[in-house]
Image (cartoon, rainbow, N blue to C red; front, top):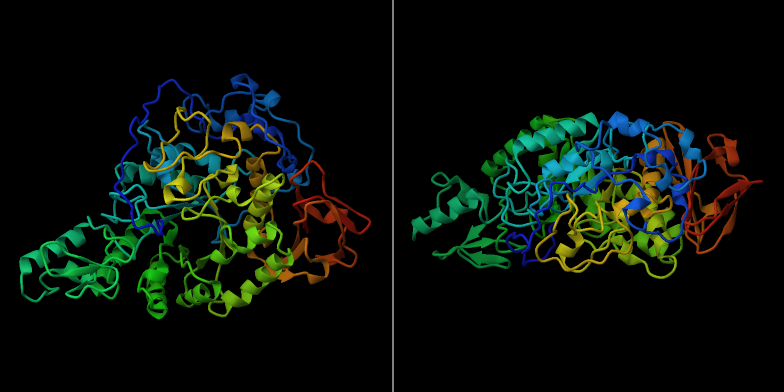
Amino acid sequence: MDGQSMNCGKRSVKSGSRRRKNGERVTAVFLAGCILFSLAGCGMGGTATVPAGDEAGAEIVPAGSETAGTQEEQRTDENAGESAVPDAAEDITDAIPLHIIDDNYRTYYEVFVYSFYDSDGDGIGDLQGLISQLDYINDGDDATDTDLGCNGIWLMPIGPSPTYHKYDVTDYCDIDAAYGTLADFKELLAECEKRGIKVIMDLVLNHSSSQNPWFQDACAYLRELGDGEPDAAECPTFEYYHFSKEQGAGCYAVEGTDWYYEAQFWSEMPDFNLDSEALRAEIEEIAKYWLDMGVGGFRLDAVKEFYTGNPEKNIEFLGWFADVVKTQKADAYLVGEAWLEISDYAKYYESGIDSLFNFAFADKDGIISKVVNGSPASRYGLESESLQETFGQYNENYIDAPFYTNHDMGRSAGYYAGENSEKQTKLAGAMNLLMSGSAFLYYGEELGMKGSGKDENKRAPMYWSKDPEKEGMCDGPADMDEVKMKFDSLEEQAQEADSVYQYYKKVIKIRNQNPEIARGEVEYLEQISGDSFCALRKTWEGSEVILIFHTGEGTEELDLQGLMVNGEAVSEKNMRGTLETGEERIVVADGKAAMPAYSVLVLK
């Protein structure tokens, strides 16, 4: 949901919104020289160093710009940024090909278009800006290491809306003018298809905007009605909302009448009456409209509020919508937001929906953060294994949707303090992205962006550059406080082998190389787990991968004697990848693994 805050205001651009010089280069994707170093070395820790001035390396050129050259030119110009990129040790993952499967197990990148990339200099991100930076998310070339490797995008609402966040929609079949046009959106879909990216749209079915013509029409009808009885045959949109002569909880007056309407989140977000068959017919057409255009599915906002306080009705409606969508497009992907305790949101899998966001592992009080902050590592393993029964009892075909942060939560770099905070930030990101299911990454988390408190702060501009005047940089929401970042911007991190950004890229690379990670049946390996170690075996189509997480502050030795993977005793040759957060490397020898602080070992 958009911040459960009720004081959402109308969108306005900050005073002094910048008009940027046409000659400025855009801070965007990567140096071509980044191709030269492996992501393994990127696991090395240390404090990020900011280059002194632009002479520290070649200027970062935006994907798709006239100055960028062709993708092929960028990929083959291997000497372009050589002096700017730190050397990195040869890594195991360098020789392993990606194994990308075109199904609904993906790695999604959540984009708030408003704050992502501004293509026209008005301070607001837009679809053309996102298109220009798609190569940052995925360039479609498995041979390169210059993209994140995400093969899905979740777009926060992009429909016309009077607010900056756009969770109150005025037209469900159009694009907000601040973001662009339907032609821009179709271009985005086409470019994503070229790169193997599935796009899912945020679909808000709990409420509309108070400025939606449906609501405006219904209110006008009630004003003209006087003391008469309303008739849906005369005004079909009357039954699209909850109107009553009694003012219940969360209800507001229809101006000029003695009627009230329900709006549980905010007066300007009137709740839909999802029992209306006419409204359901509209929703069916809305889904078809976008699916026919090429959208890969939907993220469903606030599913526990469809019928506030009535989970059975919520599940019934979700089941209806899932049937509608799957009938229209069998491989469409649906993920729902039910911000509840795990035992409560697990029940929503009865609807047949593909996924529900896994809130139990997310946020500053979730399992990942608690384990990284000192709770026994075994808890991560035990909970990961138990998810299969927790969710599977309601739907054996469920796909978990792990995420660590989103637009309603404080960013994760703020969860950790002290000398190990960077290492903890990295490890926590890996613990999210190495979970089973479709993993979700909120834009900027791969840079260690900060932002907490009110919702606007959590949706700060993508940190392409430390220079807010650089072309492409967004102003962010009008009421956003100044957000002081903890780590460097992409400009610096793209040139540093040990940055948070490079670490995230390597994690996603390992996920993409080993399909067992997303799809495998999870077994918690109690015999080699404990307070500071957690080991998981994941098995998919007869193939196994073992993930070992070390959450301790110092180097510890783990006995691997007797541990088997794919029918053989574990040895150094089974190493499939390592994720280190410091200079010390993981060493596997003589049946033991020496694992430095906050590290991950992948065996296969």
